[in-house]
Length: 62
Image 1: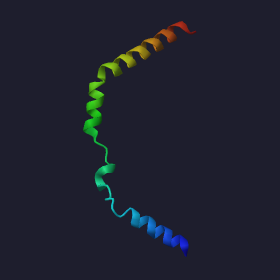
Image 2 (image 1 turned 135 degrees about the vertical axis):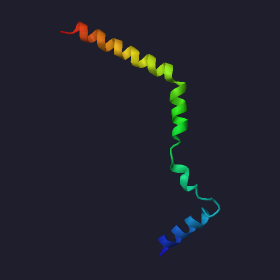
Image 3 (image 1 turned 180 degrees about the horizontal axis):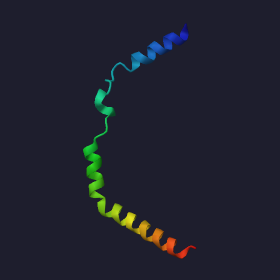
Image 4 (image 1 turned 120 degrees about the vertical axis):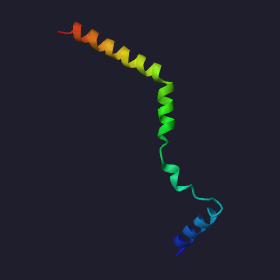
């Protein structure tokens, strides 16, 4: 079975690499909150601009 040999060789070639830690798939919420906190002015300005455009359109359209 040549395909079995290929799979074994493939795993042997990766033997030198260690597996990533199990917790590497976790999301760091504190870093996400920090990024949002640093961009709070831009976020608030964008929300305010779209709210003003929405109000303007609601008054102009029948």
